[in-house]
Image (cartoon, rainbow, N blue to C red):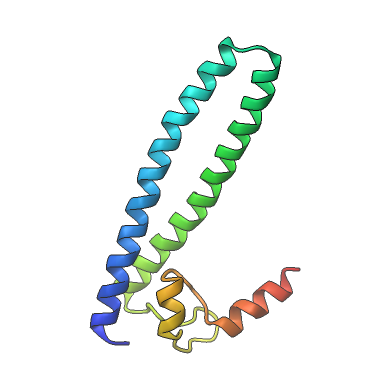
Amino acid sequence: MEKSFIEEMKKELTAQKKAILESLEGQSDEMRGLVKTVESGDEADVASDAIDRTLLTALGTQYAKKLLAIENALDRIHQGKYGLCMKCGKEIPKDRLRVIPFAPMCINCTNEEERRNR
């Protein structure tokens, strides 16, 4: 894979990482606000806020998984293995990496893993 493409993807991965961290930072402020509301609200507010907290926690987990995938992709760049499928070793198409820059596998191997996990 060309060095210029890898540098482009490294910049994209770094930007996505920064956006996730900023979003999680904002969620922490939202979470603090929800906790204050729960402490002072009536039962209907408490039930609604509990749902909001659950949603924020789930989003945090989703962000954590994406952040880990980004970190792994940055590690692969550092190791000189970026763009190679972790399962079959073939080159991942650039079009796929442009859409999902942290993709660890080619489309065929990803589909195979998804079928196996059903």
